[in-house]
Image (cartoon, rainbow, N blue to C red; front, top):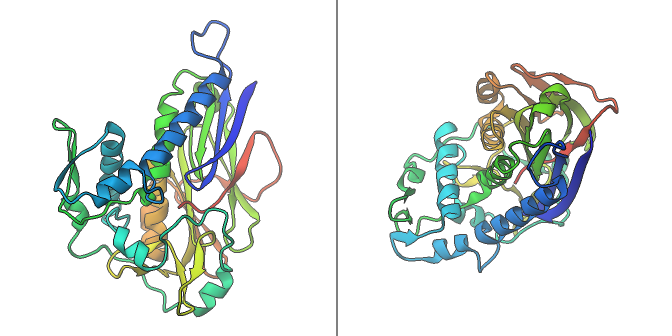
Length: 331
């Protein structure tokens, strides 16, 4: 099948759009035009919702002292996605940890920066334990007033799209591609696949092992979302020499060391898959198995062992067919 393939940088990650050409009887634009429109949307999404851009609407929201702040439909949609992810994960994927993530040192984008070796970080990490939601569940105080077109939250409660942004962006681009025979939207490892043709000719998604960097498994997928969350991409040392990473235990505000270094999840959407992958990693092996049991996924333990969970078709990789790049760790 003839497909247009576009790759570019946005949201601190690689973004890839793979879109099948519409048939001769279709009134849809050519795949190249659809990809260009998708790129513009992702770049606009990044400009509006990145906490690393001082001029973004998200930064303006977080600096605004008012309880009710006028907000664009996109920002309101992002807030709803963030609170939805928190609800689905029981508060583990918490969009209100902005102050905490900045306090551990993740203040500016780390895109393009070499991270500390994961094996070194594991050797010095504290005792493993599952993450827990913050007791006050402050994410419940964050919401939107759709009639007034406002974001509503207590002054000073920050909002961060890090736990839901890439999945939401992938889903919104995918919604614009309805009617195309086969497509993939990959926003930094948060992937949405669709089109009737993909049900007949599924894509093969390769999952990268967070410790070895090798393609450890492949998953054939013809519809829905898949996402990976891992510790291997964003690890740094703070001023005291401690290893830090971006996946926080909401209860402590500190990096979570749970016995897992990576998790891959399937979902009906990229947002759901992203949420389940992060929640599984934060939950540790026992909680991760429970979260992934219904839709399916993979867990990578500290010792490198890969565990398949639930209804997932995973196999050792061999080059074949329409393959996608290995999934890296989502932000």
